[in-house]
Length: 235
Image (cartoon, rainbow, N blue to C red; front, side, top):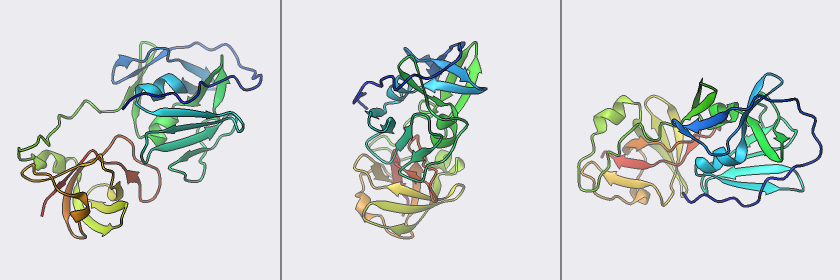
């Protein structure tokens, strides 16, 4: 996704901060340029802009309310306001995390549980580098056009299930492991049959068996909402 910054984050008011021992962040082992990791009151914080952009996300700053919006043009939509410990995901009610967003040296920072709790990523720290694990490169694309999909591997990962409800915008999918998941009927979703032939997503009906490759982010709503990468129809 083309990286885009809608407005540079500015310093909002004078904030009293202590001296931080800053480290860098990496995504799947690759260092993120200009990233910073700091400690505040025992909580680990990450710089918002460089990390969000490196994840392919858009960042918008609303100066009037000191609010940051992070989105991907689809179901991923996170908002938070500087100094307020409340984070929304997909326009849900604000939820508290380990600390409120802060501004240091004109940059916005959020606690790392924005990554783990809201985006379902894993993190690990080695040699003063915080590594964000997205698993985006851990799986080869198995939906090459014209070739049969190896569904056994995906089923083993718990991505197989059955459709229980369909609307104009979403598919309610009963994952055999995760339970109910709402699938966005985005035009970007690759939908095929078992032989790799393209299938119209609107042809999917109740009781259709699917194999789903989920997108990276799953909302915290109940049921969670996901923008899938691909769907295989197993009628």
